[in-house]
Structures are given as structure tokens and as C-alpha cells.
Length: 381
Image 1 (cartoon, rainbow, N blue to C red):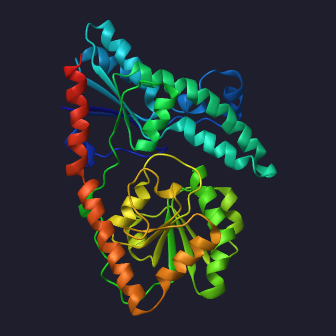
Image 2 (image 1 turned 180 degrees about the horizontal axis):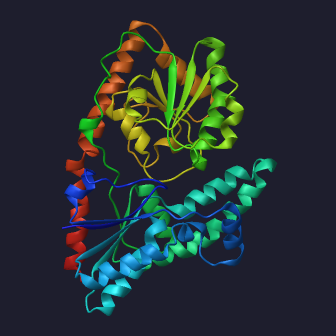
Image 3 (image 1 turned 90 degrees about the vertical axis):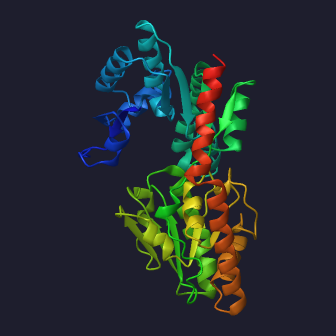
């Protein structure tokens, strides 16, 4: 039996036919609060909490959290991500005040201090990005303290990759962290790997395009990899598919080989139509859900090592891995070749990738792992 408290995007409405209502006894939603850059800047300078710990500060959500936690005797309070951690703490305090103590499971979607550390080290290499680097350095230090405190306070901590779990161990040696990967609805991603009439000269990247690692990825690819590909295949196009394109991407709009779609109703069809799906990530953390999506569709994927971090794949088995512009371009061109050998390789990579996702990342494999966290935590109390 699940009661859900969640934020919605500005203007978003949870309609009566929303599938969440069929899964949950109660669904209560609050519109995501707005914090301008000035407010965020001042908070970064004068408040001890990290920006992510303040991003979803809401008196309405605090009121709902306290009300539900005192009115009900829950077995588990599960908090999704560091931005919601404050409400997990509040729910536990409110429950204790009413005479109960649920177990608190903190699901850490990304190891956030590590992400900010990587952002800082990347931005420090470019003088025009030094302001962003300074922000990341401040957040990195604050998140180390805040993330460690939250993890120590929780009864169980879940990370989505072994790399993230290891980073959390470094924050708090002895911390118990269970790796439960992101899962994927396999039925939603139709396998198209054997549908190969010939390589399509379209390279696709999907993701939320105001997210700094995604911005860095597509700029690096557009400036340093795409020109090398076009020297051999000038007809190749690059599609950047995702909501909220940041203004830093505006410089790419004049390039006729690049399309920035902005928000689209769904991304699956773009992935399925790709000649090659690219993941040129150089910063980030967590498990790359975009990689699971592309592999579930049986698409050929070229990625950096960081772009596939947390997923136990091998170069040449499920996908190709390349970390320098020449190597990345060479891998893409290899997969775009219009000959029988390349066609066979594309099909083999696609089949192996789909099988890999089916065996390790379907919900039938993932859900029992999370249920075991509940069982172990209850038994250990």
C-alpha cells in the first residue's frame, strides 16, 4: 500500500486517469517551487546546505509530509534523490512524535558530490567556465557533508551503480549501500536491431538539455567529433533530442548538420530511427538510463567510458567505447559503413545489447533487489 508525495512541473496537473492513481492509495502533489539565480547565488554563499538541498524547499510539502506521517503508521519511508532528503528526515521525525518509527530508505539517484566534483574539474580547464567551476566547487564541498549526513541517518541507502556506491563508501567508511540499478520497461522499447536496410546517416543523443553533463557532452561531440565524421561522411546529421535546451547550445543552431528538437512527446522513435546512438558524456554519475534505452531497442551505440559507467558491458560485445575524438569518430564511421560485414556487426551488437538489458535490467530482475533491501532492513531492526 503506497502513499505518494511528489512535486509536479509548473503547470502540470495529475489527472484522474494518471496511472499513479491506480498504483497508490493516496497521491498528493505540490507544484515545484521556483528559485531564481539570484536566490540560488545568495543561498550558495550564505547557507550551509547545498543548492540541491534547498531546491525543493516548500512549506506546502512540509505540511503534507508532517500530516501524512503523523496520521499513518508506515513501515517504510522511501525518499527519491538528494533533493527530497529533507522530507525524509521530516517524515521520520513526525512519525516518531506520533509513536512510530518507520525504516527510512534513501534512494540516491546520483552520487551528487561526485557529479559536482567532476563538473568543477572539467570547467576549470576553460577560463570562460570559471564561474560555473566556482559554483561546483562550493556545491561539491557542501554536498560531501550533506550527502554523508543523509546516508548515515537513513536505515538503508540504495545506489544505482557500484561506482556510486564506492564513492559513498569514501564519504562514510562502513556505510551500508545496496546497488539497485535503474530498471527499464522492456515492452515499451521495441527491438529494431535486425531491421537494417542500410545505415541511416543520423546520430542521436537524448537527454534533458539543461543538465550540465548533457550540455558538455553534445558541445564536445559537435565541436571535436562531428567534424571528423563529416570529413568522410559529409551527409551525417546529429540530432539532440530533449527538453529545455540551454542557451549554451545556441551556438550549434546555425550548423545545418545539427538539429536541436527541444521537448518532444516521446524519445523512443528518435532512438529507433538512429543510425548510431551516441553517448559522449565526459562528466556525470549514476547509471546511464539513455544507454539502457538504446540497447533495449537493439541500436548500435558508441559511448565514452564514463557514458557507460555503472553498466557491466564490454567494448565490441554490446557496444563500442571510445574516449578521444579520433577514436569516437572512427567507431561511428565503422558502424555507418554500408557493407555486409558492418551490417552483420550492427545486428550482432544490437541482439547482444537487447539480450543484456533483458537479463539484467528488466523490472523482473530489479524489483526483487529493492524488496530484499526492505526485508534486510526490517529484520535488522
